Image (cartoon, rainbow, N blue to C red; front, side, top):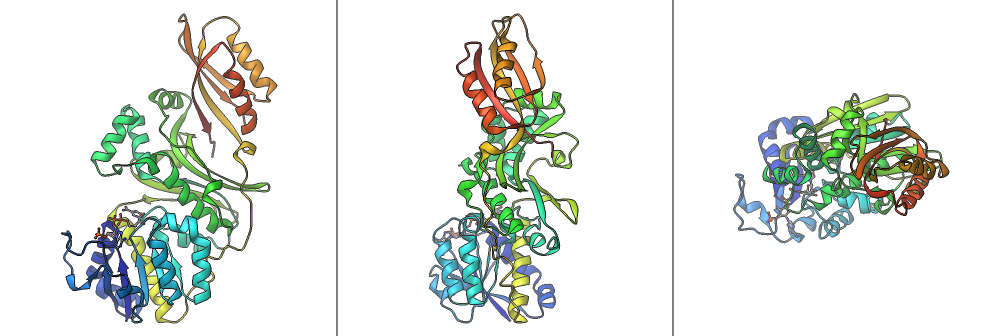
Length: 426
Ligand SMILES: NC(=O)c1ccc[n+]([C@@H]2O[C@H](COP(=O)([O-])OP(=O)(O)OC[C@H]3O[C@@H](n4cnc5c(N)ncnc54)[C@H](OP(=O)(O)O)[C@@H]3O)[C@@H](O)[C@H]2O)c1
């Protein structure tokens, strides 16, 4: 029998409890022995809960779990940094295997936690930390192990994907789409981590660390959110044959890892363009396997619990048969992250300019001097004092584009720079 200590009985914890109860017999035959929840840590023992469970399992004293020698496996579903970090460290020090869904902890302390686990001869698993129900952590470690992963593109945040889908398909503005996402429970009351791109950044940092076996510091990930996307940008993207998605990007290049999260124009025919609503997807390229796309529900109670229980099954087998996978996660390399100023991209720029002769020539002169060449120019309305123009550049070094933008700000003809969005041809 494998005895489990569950830390947290909230959204995901309740889902995990239900699956372990509902599929008890099936799981027993899969693992070869019974999986039993021995204790459950919660903050408030008296809280009313929606699931049927044995109340005698509840405790609010973590020592009942972490210092219980009978417990083999800890499942951390509290979330956040503290006390989850301390609990995981203490569990590992006491020789217990750990399963967690906590992206923040793995992105910030993955290297240290995995090192400690290896030292203690136990495993740490975190399938649910990225893209909820979509299997991607184990595939990166096992199914794609024969590959050098060269690039990963992810739609890794359901809330922002829902908002952008509503803006694209129904013409809703950002605030209205966000309110609807909150009403439907897709966005938290404080949605800042989703909207700002931070949530997706933690996830792409974890995927990149595994893919390139190098610890990525979240501080090195360039992050931009979707808060400045306007309906005009969505409409212009369509006109140019693109859709706007919040894209998490990671590319292994000879001069460093290019890792970033930002809204991007992607071609309307690309498979990622059809990933809508709260769905997530990961599109990667490995040198042997070629292009692969994984698609599914990136959050939610049962999809996330499904990934957690898969980890529990694997970790339990390893404990039961005495063969923990302690080496699979250790990052062996020290690749550097490329500074965003050195990354090449094509850009969409939406400006407001004075409608008078020679304006376009002045703008083109600034761009040309900074080695930025134009792929297309759209000028829609005429005969008004101020008109919008849209420029799309060829591939340029980001620092050259930024120099041009700085010069635009001093040009009397440029009234406003409404938006700058990278174009990813994928
Ligand atoms: N929800 C999702 O769709 C989703 C998707 C992917 C990953 N995740 C990750 O899964 C983890 C759990 O998320 P969740 O949505 O299930 O969270 P949640 O609903 O807020 O549940 C948290 C649980 O932890 C308990 N808890 C919190 N702080 C505690 C403390 N200091 N001591 C003891 N118990 C404590 C709470 O106890 P009480 O019940 O007594 O309040 C609650 O049972 C997070 O790392 C999250 O990022 C969630």
